Length: 146
Image 1 (cartoon, rainbow, N blue to C red):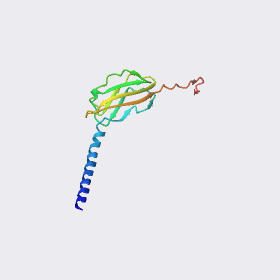
Image 2 (tube, one colour):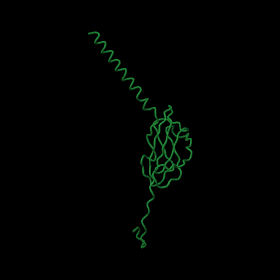
Image 3 (spheres, rainbow, N blue to C red):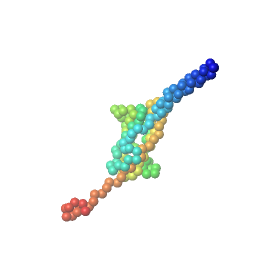
Image 4 (tube, helix red, strand yellow):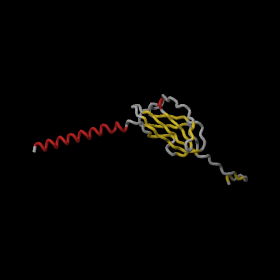
């Protein structure tokens, strides 16, 4: 009886240790990457006014100096981006990507960031700039739009 009980206790202790170990390791695995938590513009947002910059907010501090970003229009037309500023005053988990003047079209910003712990994370943000809507013609009698 004593052998059965000690085996059960040993198995229980190993199971308990395994569960604690998994709980301890899992958050580190998830937190090992800088994941995008917010962006401006937001994913798949349709804008009337072209943005002057894209702001990416991550869940962890990133190494901004080694960030790579590429802006593509339509299928794969690459648009040259201005250099990414150092942004020393901003939070370490925020990246501001300046944009050139954009016209109407579909865009995607592809990026690769390096988290402070050494893990790289690729990602992309899609957005669309719509053509400005034309105003309806004015009524010549002064009554406003036709």
